[in-house]
Image (cartoon, rainbow, N blue to C red; front, side):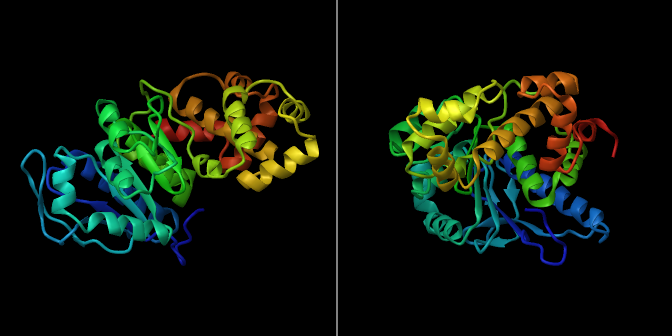
Length: 332
């Protein structure tokens, strides 16, 4: 979904400000989305007019005091939003829940009306406490794995991932992965040109000590077809291999016709399109985070023909592989 300046499906980004928030995580989100707003306005011929609101909100609309004892003014109180960012904090969580009883019902209400909710590190605790992550995959900062797992046994905590997504609920383990998440969301709503321009403008380092989790697939696992879930997991592990879907279907006790029908019913995607997306998302990470050649990347994600890979990449991203990579390193 790319923003149209006339309809502007994404207008309101709300960033939760509470006492003991890490101001750096709050302002990081503010800067990313404000830059995206300006960039999108410029790209759509509207000049540097912000195309959507990015607001700091507190439960009562009053300033808050950060972890480092800085008083942070806010733009207003809780209200309707299209994207909600829950920054990291350093405080006893039960104390915060008692201090801010408005937050949990607000999150439930906003998620029900279709808002995208994002938690960073301890910010993920809000999503879990609201019950929104029950039965879903999530992650948080490694220091809090044990506490999180004990407090929220119904959440599928994945300690191996730095990013997770499920049903418009996104979790980032820490600061670096939150940057990856914001770039992903900007690309989702504003397109790849704006996303890569923001990554460049905001001094975003693409080198990282981990491989970003594939985003955009979590919502496609919220179904009850256990065999298809097993196949999705198998595809994530073998996406670069040479195989036939007929063999995958047979290995899981299905005819190819039944497999095709069940896979699309469960995920909303045909198997081939799903596989292509897995490969393209992996290629995007390799293009932005390594200096490997296009031909090498094409081979590593499962395509022997680099020309075919380039055409497919353009179909999925609106950019050639070279252009996608260049936007991380070109001057503005």
